[in-house]
Amino acid sequence: MYNSKSHKAEEFICHEEVLASLNYAEENKNNIDLIDKIIEKAKLRKGLTHREAAVLLDCQIEEKNQEIYALAEQIKKDFYGNRIVMFAPLYLSNYCINGCVYCPYHLKNKHITRKKMTQEEIRRETIALQDMGHKRLALEAGEDPINNPIEYILESIKTIYSVKHKNGAIRRVNVNIAATSVENYKKLNDAGIGTYILFQETYHKDSYEKLHPTGPKHDYAYHTEAMDRAMEGGIDDVGIGVLFGLELYRYEFSALLMHAEHLEATYGVGPHTISVPRIRPADDIDPSTFDNGIDDDTFAKLVACIRISVPYTGMIVSTRESKECRERVLHLGVSQISGGSKTSVGGYAAAEPEEEDSSQFQPNDNRTLDEVVKWLMELGYIPSFCTACYREGRTGDRFMQLLKSGQIQNCCHPNALMTLKEYLEDYASCETSNLGNQLILDEIHNVPNEKIRKIVIENLEKIGNGSRDFRF
Ligand code: SF4
Image (tube, rainbow, N blue to C red):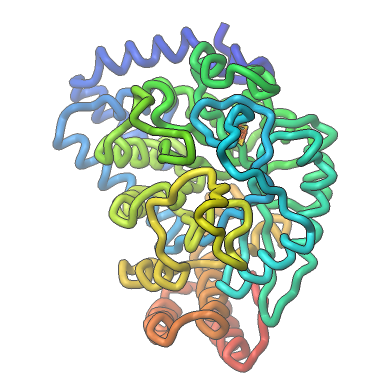
């Protein structure tokens, strides 16, 4: 029944295979020889199977867990260096016809304020986001064919890309909208989106159907096979994820990796990113009513195990997590974070009045982008506003080749420094700017190729003199 190359959801996320993997992990969680072998395999940096990864996730031996954390940290450094890519969500509309029980946008919620931005409002929000320093957005919208048809999403993308305010520009628009048809994925691809993001919420079919009692999202197969249709529509950067807290995390972890294996086996390229959201309080949502919440230690272990299982896949943590928790998982594998986020429809250009709350969840990290940027640099990271790969056509397997070739230090690293310099020139506070300029001076020596280093130094100078948008 289990077939990673099948196009049927219940075959590539085979329930029996998940259960068998969980049993295998339970039986072997104290099997030191096997755990050592799996860790040795992970050190080759070619990833692990979902079964092997499940054993490490269950491993109860403290010493081995410390080895797993150390390896996750090392793999992250090897593939991603010390760069952290920045982005912000932009909610276009919270109209939704689905009945998801964990989301305040569900149809039966008559309490929450419903909003849908006009193109003029989107333009104002884009200017506000540019004025913060953002270059990369994740568009969010509920599922509603009347209020949020694909034409509305496409028009919004066009509006966002068209806004050029002062030195600002949104250079990459990722899109997180409901599962749709191949035809619509083609349209999104033609509109120049970056990553298509869709969270599975839960891979457990029975739970999925209970958690999505009404609306088109109730269809487990249609939702689970969405990435196949996206690939068919030409989108080769896809982002997957689970909403942790809905089902048993061990189940979700194995199934999530099976989904990654399916994409790799079928299309030759795994997911571009994996997100690991946890349920947060929202309008009529109380996370304590869900039985499967996970604590911070389990969350950290999940991140570390994902990092060593799929070394080439970026990992995203949003403002659902606190500053402390984000710091912990940055070390263990996270490569992208949001900053200064608003989770309401609009809210960047002007704060939303409290009585008009339209947010999808309450953020756990309410710092400004400048505060987040400064904090990252204090921790030794380079905040990166780079969007070069997608603009240079390095998507899908071409992006993976870059990662695997070890040329990151000659490509992503300089791009991170140049886009950080733009941020410092145009948007940073004085303190952040001083810290950043020193960081750039220190980090420039870590560009191994002498010729490239020379070009970077010249470009940094040009950015200081007003030029923008250099990239490798
Ligand atoms: S999770 Fe998405 S589909 Fe479900 S109610 Fe919220 S916005 Fe609608």
